[in-house]
Amino acid sequence: MLEREERALEREERALEREEQVLERVLERVLELEKQEVVQLRSYSTASASQQGIDSLPRSLPAQSDDEFSLII
Image (tube, rainbow, N blue to C red):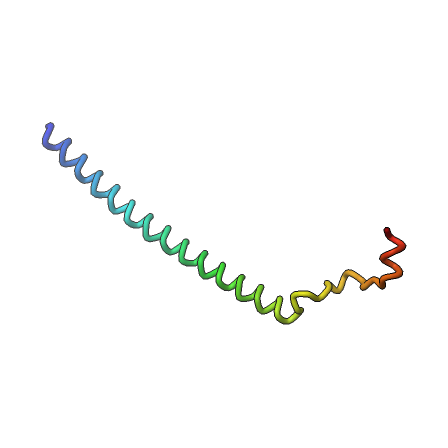
């Protein structure tokens, strides 16, 4: 009886180890995909910034002359 329980526990332990290995591979794949996404976003961001020019004003903000700025102050 005790031998049977030990074998059952060993089988459960092996099954848990296999599940852990599968979960580790899934986690590695998810992390790999997230890294690829970050690289793509950086690439997109860099391309977008170079098209607009880093120092350019956003189109939603009108340019102000020096006279207009002094009125605000």
